[in-house]
Length: 291
Ligand SMILES: Cc1cc2nc3c(=O)[nH]c(=O)nc-3n(C[C@H](O)[C@H](O)[C@H](O)COP(=O)(O)OP(=O)(O)OC[C@H]3O[C@@H](n4cnc5c(N)ncnc54)[C@H](O)[C@@H]3O)c2cc1C
Ligand code: SF4
Image 1 (cartoon, rainbow, N blue to C red):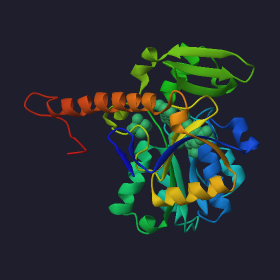
Image 2 (spheres, rainbow, N blue to C red):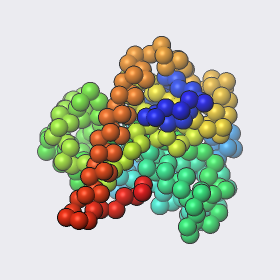
Image 3 (cartoon, rainbow, N blue to C red):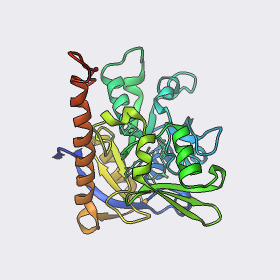
């Protein structure tokens, strides 16, 4: 077990991509999140999973309890807007009747799941029914209107025509269905970030069973951390079943060095914000959830 101060605890880290061509067609990166949940469903490891499905407006995510491969596939692609995944956690064990719940989401949502498992407050049945969590790397998120301003005003694209969005190499990238590409420098997007993200001290979903993201691996591939016993068992079986192509992360560029550098930047910057809250007022401060 490796215990990295910025990348969390993990057993192994690899660069990987799905071997399922259909999943890869619309996956954000290597299709890891989708392939793992489909595999877990087909193997009976989970009987349903919370995903960020299609919402009512273009590119607005809507949390959903997916119980078929088809519904899991509908959640492919990153939606850079808040999707309150955990709002369905208890309900998944009630009207949906699930015994083995899967959950996908960003770092803070993995934290919520673990907290509910250890300190279930009005969360009866939840601790024992969480079966598998897949966490995404996350630098920051945006309220829907913010994302709309970035795409429609700064990138000058209509949301309805967008095929993919990506934050990489210092820019917010917008790709349209008809082949146009627009970029916005990240310094223009900072003011639109969700303020709550500025106290977040987790970049690579430290508390998930398996976590995945794009940084560190080439386009079309993902960086994957296998963290827990549950994660390790599922990953080993899935690789043995031929579901993923993998490469040791040490053989991949830019690899863990860049990832660790970005994780450190996020944590150092946000730790400073947490500190500043202590002396925010005159002789008084703001609450610290980590105190
Ligand atoms: C807000 C946000 C910020 C991110 N920032 C970074 C970053 O800084 N660096 C980095 O390397 N990676 C980041 N990622 C992760 C990256 O964009 C991909 O989501 C990840 O690599 C998974 O790709 P995939 O091909 O395996 O997923 P796919 O197989 O395409 O599946 C997509 C998965 O993402 C989930 N999802 C989509 N939108 C949301 C959402 N808004 N909230 C919760 N879950 C969602 C779906 O439920 C699904 O499980 C971010 C993701 C999000 C949602
Ligand atoms: S930056 Fe942190 S708090 Fe904000 S969405 Fe990402 S994981 Fe959640």
